[in-house]
Amino acid sequence: MKIIFAADGSKYTKKALAFLVTHESLAGPDGEVIVLNVQTPVPPRVKSMLGSDDVNAYHADESQKVLSPIERFLKRHKVAFRTMATVGTPATEILRITKREKAQMIVMGTHGQGLLSRALIGSVAQRVVADSEVPVLLVK
Picture 1 (cartoon, rainbow, N blue to C red):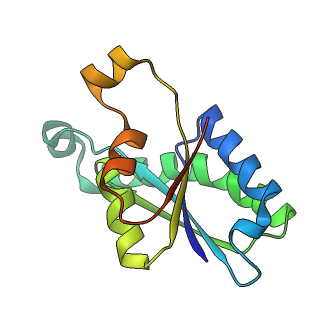
Picture 2: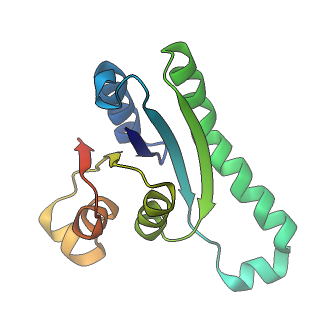
């Protein structure tokens, strides 16, 4: 099974990663985990002031801060994986990459915000669950 593992570097990502590794049968013997980090775009005004090259370098650096420890962890646990980084709205990008990669499941940590927070600002996990065409495993 091909699994998209959405990683934002939070403690919830670490919990979801631990769950994934301890339930290695989830992906199956021929499975693959695609570790995906989505960086939020900088405002256009900032991009025009700094330039595209600097903004792209910033996004690459921020993604590596999230992906490098996960890579080391998955290598240590002998999990087949590859990493991807993109820039955009997190829920939209997670769903787009899932469809493009023909993944069968999404695994992600959830911040477990309260009802009021979700109602006011929304939740990436909530949007992914609502719009996903494949099963979504949320780890709290």
